[in-house]
Length: 462
Image 1 (cartoon, helix red, strand yellow):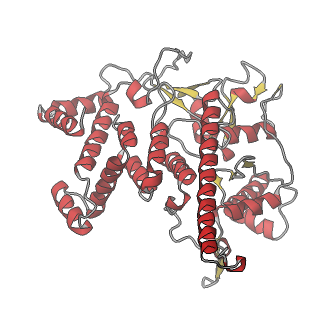
Image 2: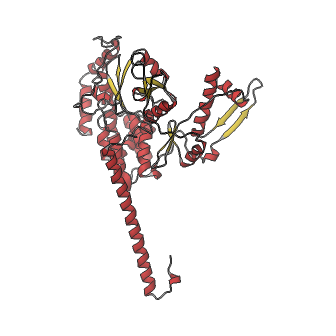
Image 3: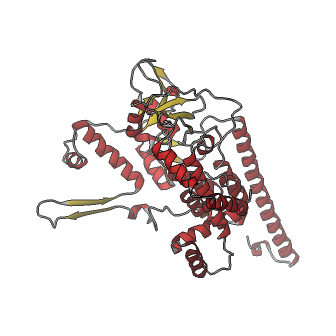
């Protein structure tokens, strides 16, 4: 269905009466059919091989999710209708749209940017037209891809469309952090120069200028320390302070003080770095490192390991199992949670008392809050051999599938992935060979011209 036809259908449905919106409120707030049961469900998470891949909000029919899908499609339709021409004046166009829609000029610009993205990338446009992506997620995609030039646009469009297409039945829609990280990675592979500036660190100075330490002693009763560090360095410092605080029952402030005064005692902190042998890229905790930071953290490495699946009879996960878990999961495996797996609990998917064994293939990373919800019986989890996790909510019975997003999430190579990797390598080799042939042909032409003019070898300009 085209955007215009979809817009007309939604408008006509809404215009048919206010009962539609009223029924949504009644269903969600009053619960007339008693669907919000407090009994623990016993969901069947066995995979149906015939079930098609889908987004969870589409596979779990609900009036509320349907209303949100309609709102998302309306925003998408508005963005398509607001697509500007490249020669349009920004202030004049966004002002007109803002007055028409009754929104701010900034929001009007967002609609224009999304519309431009839709017109430039047809595959991505088709992928987001399913209605599961909110305006905030579409804005992230528009921001990440706006600087991609025409030479790289087709490949970025194809890879981004693949990212925005569900690969599993009832797959959870990626959150803003995961989506920005994945989309930026795609752009970085094809055109690193088009990568956007980190929205939380505009005009980032070089690493040596990112550090600062100031002391505020104006209050005679207390002193304030202000410390600024690059994100990767701050990760290490925070983990050390938290480890001291946990070991002694201190607050972070007291732990920092004891650490400076040498009273922290024997506290060990392990930070896991994951390095891709082929590309040399390094991942620390929950972020990819730039080359300078990668070199700095490589010099700090004290132990090397190849994380692999293992099992033992003890209750708690080993350091190797935790490292593997964090590297695969990336974030908390609960739907909608993006807390880093590096500081999450290593949770037994099935109760340890029912199966007294700690197997890395039966563990998952859950942040403490989501772990408590699972313990209370509000969510039921099943981890599948491919690393995906099925989660069913006790409140509404909806099942959502989350996928791993860590640096080792795709460590297991499929035949399709291997073929794609081989095709890309051959394309790059062929491009390099043609570049060499062109450079050689140019050099030969220049040499022939010089020889025809009777110049000596010393006059050849190379």
